[in-house]
Length: 175
Ligand SMILES: [Zn+2]
Image 1 (tube, rainbow, N blue to C red):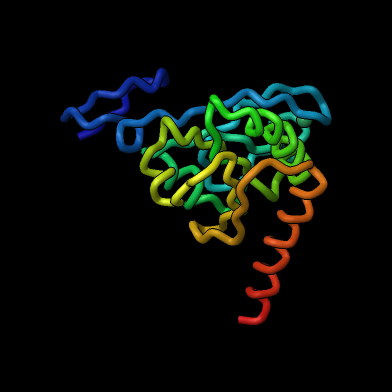
Image 2: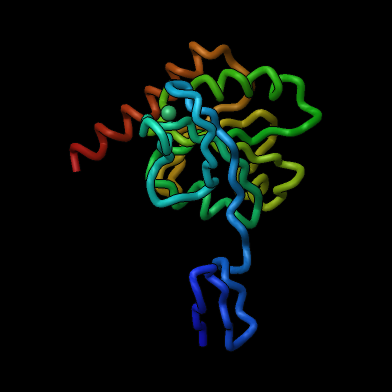
């Protein structure tokens, strides 16, 4: 039994079930809007895509996922996800990270960037048979559309990403 009392939102709970879904608090990131400067709290997982609370421009969506929240943050995303499987000790990962963030900014509202530290997420690393880092995936609805290993300049990454997404949209229009 759950009874809400007063405007403060205090809950009188009849059992010990946690209030947040599955007992997890959704992580949020502060993102400054490039258009108006408003700082927005952007959740790692949401049903839509993040927009600025002030000017309503789409915000870049960059999140971190691990073994426990990969499904919610990556597979349930409504927009395609660029997954960066990286490691803290990996020099090329540090080089490719800003390029991926630039792509996420360019495609605000149409792409989500999710970083997975493979050492902290052994199940995800095993599931995608990660042999080298960085390994980059383009996924949509849990399906891997494209995959590549190793760092590359932003122009090459942009071409690779566009090709993966174009192939997916042409496949959809044929069905
Ligand atoms: Zn704004």
